[in-house]
Length: 444
Ligand SMILES: Cc1cc2nc3c(=O)[nH]c(=O)nc-3n(C[C@H](O)[C@H](O)[C@H](O)COP(=O)(O)OP(=O)(O)OC[C@H]3O[C@@H](n4cnc5c(N)ncnc54)[C@H](O)[C@@H]3O)c2cc1C
Image 1 (cartoon, rainbow, N blue to C red):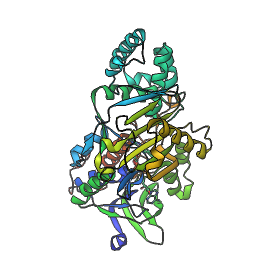
Image 2 (cartoon, helix red, strand yellow; image 1 turned 60 degrees about the horizontal axis):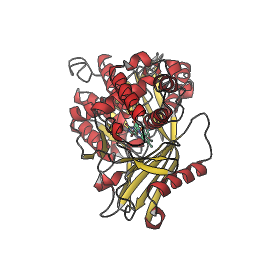
Image 3 (cartoon, protein in one colour; image 1 turned 90 degrees about the horizontal axis):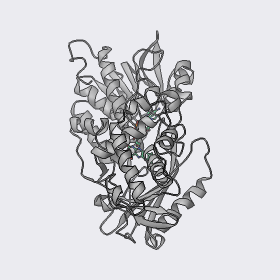
Image 4 (cartoon, rainbow, N blue to C red; image 1 turned 180 degrees about the vertical axis):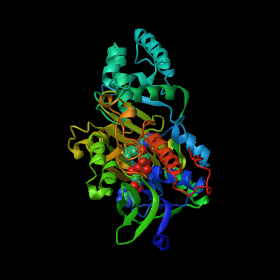
């Protein structure tokens, strides 16, 4: 591509996922000359959407939890989207499916809980509303649920909700800070399914970045970060060519980031990345001619770590007329990964329970056995969110990290966006753009 011949830029951004595009949008808005290098043809990384037979498949089921860094930045950058909010939730318990309101206050009406459970649940929500999540950073979700939820049925319920929120079954290591923050947010802010898939967000960020002059180059694999005198000086592209830059934002996953610096031998960065625990999950999405049981769109499993949602019920553009797109996923324990074929069968079993007859109307399927839903889980042993790597890379000036494994703020895409925004602010503060050309800090 002609753009890849650029030899100099103020800031080189490695990775064209949500984090890289967000950093580019804030930097270019502030007047920086920015170039994004994405190794794939398609932008978006894990937020990309693939079209097949008229169905729009995300990289596994995605929902935007509003009220955090991501929805705030999308609004600020003019990234708009049509959305639907999932409701009509059911639970699978002991092989039986029952209605179960997703809205936390609606839980008080379900017949799955007895009067004592409901009273305890009400008290629990009052306590959650008053809790300071940061004070729970060193406590694990498991410890916190065991301490706060004594009644067995409520404990099963909260464990299922926690697994779905955390994208893992490893609740004994994940910080309760994340869970309580998400519970608090879910009481105030809706969940959005994005109509047209998450590529709508990717396209919106790309447009925001390009509007203010950022260059975005696809099929451009960065092989390494150039550095000298303890400072990042640019990037080296596969197939030859070096692009000089005053600052580099690495917005890849943690292992890719470590490989890019000093040929994978940067000890301080390796130490930081080595301790991270990601959350792989198994995702089976099915495209159907029609939804066999339209009145049962969302099913939360109470007996195991599984979840299913007919997203097309709320976002009709993800399936062609009359068709349906159902996403399912199984949370895993990253320390004890099992057989992906068994997990696929578990998800098929969930579909048999939630949408019996789905096999007869199957158009196509997408199975992603080990996709990383979270780059780095906030761990209780590391002090929760604050234990994730800093945005300013250790031991090398002018190098910034962004992604859902970086920085002290947010979870999932909120962490990607918060760290990207911070990376943009730090690069500007550090003088990535000549003085006078830009009001430093306007991207903070
Ligand atoms: C199944 C699943 C479900 C999810 N559900 C939700 C959800 O419900 N809500 C939510 O908020 N989040 C969810 N997420 C998380 C969300 O998708 C991610 O947090 C977000 O997309 C991460 O964006 P990113 O830019 O930080 O990283 P990525 O999307 O991983 O982007 C990194 C990019 O860097 C590129 N790259 C890597 N190495 C190089 C190189 N050497 N040169 C050039 N480019 C390179 C990659 O190709 C990629 O495009 C989910 C994720 C998955 C997988």
